Length: 437
Image (cartoon, rainbow, N blue to C red):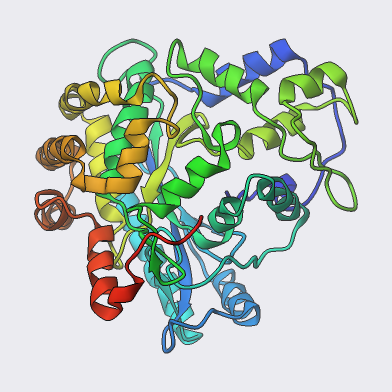
């Protein structure tokens, strides 16, 4: 959700030339899918920040502000941003290899943790805050408008903004031509394999100290926000055409102003905004901003941003989803195996876009307890492990993936199941499905 641009941070550039529907289609098609050989890789890791001595207590805004002020004074190769609830995010620069990407982010995380320790704070890798209700840390026009918009569909929007964290893997769009590394295949694979990744890395089964009944409560919240804001485009047809149509027909979250609160329109699509020109005609800058407010499970931004994976436990837990995803997309042999493995799962989607279909719902609710998702995960993780040496991955990365395969995938137990076992042992009466999200 974070965006380092001036517009996203609260500024509003002077309006320029109004944009037309054909221009939107051309811009979206040209900018959001930049094809070519898969050469670079990136990762965005989000973390909840917690008190080291008393993790059950929320971190006060003043303590967060002091820690973040010190963090902005240190040198990092990754971009550091702050999410609306105070979550910390590191976004790596495009890396030429998996090894380079892991090295950059690992070094930056070491620096970040050292600064936070000086403030008595630490990073928590989990998809949803298991203890505290959502509380907004950032108060900017962007987030004021986002909260007002999302509140219309219920409480899940605030939980997503303020209580969730993820591992987002960024991949090149792929070749223009067909084949295992072609952009059309990679787009399809991201939306189908994505359900397997949701299930295998589910790590958010608790909210307000109670089990929610979902292995990935974070994914449930995204689904509840609605298809216009957090859904994929139609799975049929050309990806560029589908995404351009989706951008035009998605509701506008807000209309920026130079001063004062931003306007939050009611059921106004970007296409309708262009046609009516009210309250002012949308510009190219408005289009860029509108796209930044769409949160599908796979977001094309020149590259493909896979957004469906919960934040992972442990200091280095984020490395496993990064390595597995990179192997299954960027190694041609592994990509072909992954495609053949998950192709039968596509029938369970009933032709509906992710995540609003039965396949993705089962992944979020049941995780690896779903037999078909478990079977696919075993094949995909084994395939990824075999492919990692071909990507130049070192023994530490390979050992991390092998350990995850043995610890979680083979026994059909995602990190969420470990958390549920712990919750039951500590407070058996808290294990239930009575929370309303």
